Length: 332
Ligand SMILES: NC(=O)C1=CN([C@@H]2O[C@H](COP(=O)(O)OP(=O)(O)OC[C@H]3O[C@@H](n4cnc5c(N)ncnc54)[C@H](O)[C@@H]3O)[C@@H](O)[C@H]2O)C=CC1
Ligand SMILES: O=C([O-])CC(=O)C(=O)O
Image 1 (tube, helix red, strand yellow):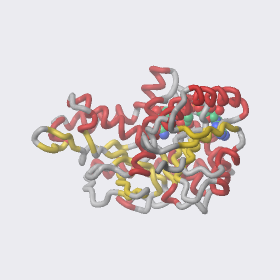
Image 2: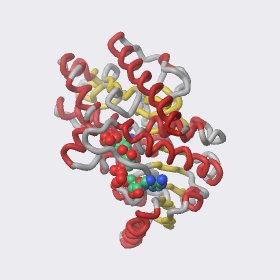
Image 3: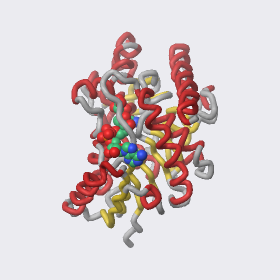
């Protein structure tokens, strides 16, 4: 029997990431090749005409899984009945800015859209915040939508996770699909900690630790980390626009694994509400290694954290604590 369509909201749908993301969703990349979808697309009035153009293209693409499109500048209409909300709407940073520089503009959007989601989304709606500063926007959304369970609110660090897999794959000349279990800890910012201490590569002789195969701790503890931390800025420098296709793809990976589950023996990175695991302060949205099953994520427990890692986990937590204070000062 055909499945009922799932309603997926994309805010900022007339923007760069939106333009890459909506066709992926309509093709089943996010929810699977047998899952019909109805797309809800929100943008602001100055982008209304462009948003309508995106809607026209979605019709023209004749996607078999796409059962309807709502394109609107009305946040209530956009949020009504949605099962999944991908929050991309906001302002991207430009060359030379840190992600928290877009804070003032973006946190107020997340405060107001929190209430609309809380009132109008379907029960148990899963929320993914992409817009920067992603962790702090997600935290603001959580705090201003108290009736949405905290386990349903997350932010995107899967792009960083995928970037880390990509760097290891290039370094070792192995298929990216053979690399797994890197971890992005903390903030989606230049203080994030890409950790390979538990990562492995599939080889003909079984799974081997990335550290053993790379066999260059200077690179792994230095250039590898800074490359992943600075990748967003490198893309802006090269394209004069921030990452879009990779961000859209990461958003699909994030939701797909959350809804359909992570493969056995594999974890992924998600920005989720900290419960104090790994001595990360509770009450921050922090990126952790997680496994997903039955639509729920669970932080992977019991991983060893050496002294080098500990400092990095704490540094990015401190930045998030500061960002939280800054966000509240922007809102008041
Ligand atoms: N977490 C991550 O890994 C990544 C996050 N980003 C962030 O994603 C966001 C979007 O990036 P782009 O698509 O490149 O930007 P963009 O500027 O191309 O698109 C953003 C869209 O949001 C719309 N918008 C602005 N205010 C809105 C509101 N109140 N409600 C609904 N829509 C609104 C704009 O009109 C625009 O169409 C930026 O904040 C960017 O920094 C980008 C890449 C990766
Ligand atoms: O760097 C930016 O501003 C966009 C982004 O978040 C990323 O590419 O990781």
